[in-house]
Length: 161
Image (cartoon, rainbow, N blue to C red; front, side):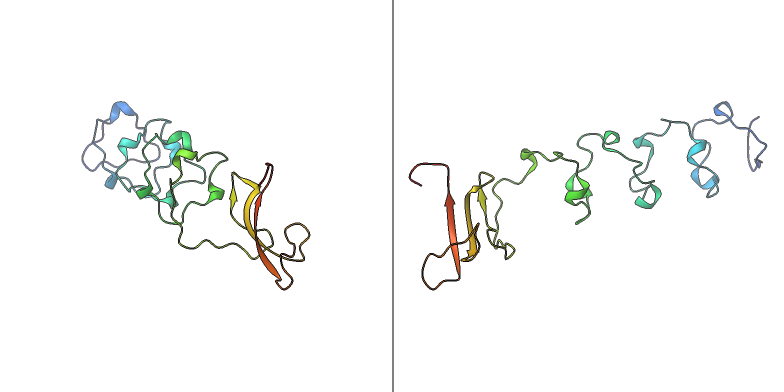
């Protein structure tokens, strides 16, 4: 069966690849909702077949695209909208040291007002600068007769520190 001109197909019509030549059906000739994913054979549409920005987020099923489906280097930071990826979206150990910013510059670094909070060095509380109240048994202690909060510098596990 060959289709030409304004021929109409009914649900009883059968079309296979032998009846359609390349580029003879335009997307404007397909009614909305008449073609579903079950009508398309697996692996018959490649990324090169899809126009840029032709598929929106609302058109993708949840978890339809996985990292194995994305070629290395095809997504750059400019492709990602601000605040769309959070730490919860990342798999454990998915960001390596080489992907982190070298020499970050921080103008103001704030810590929650909790005894013992502060910057740590070498990933350990043994090497730390922090503040605490005098009454905190773990982090505090009175350095003079009048202060209620003090700043502490901790360097442990060594001689003459």
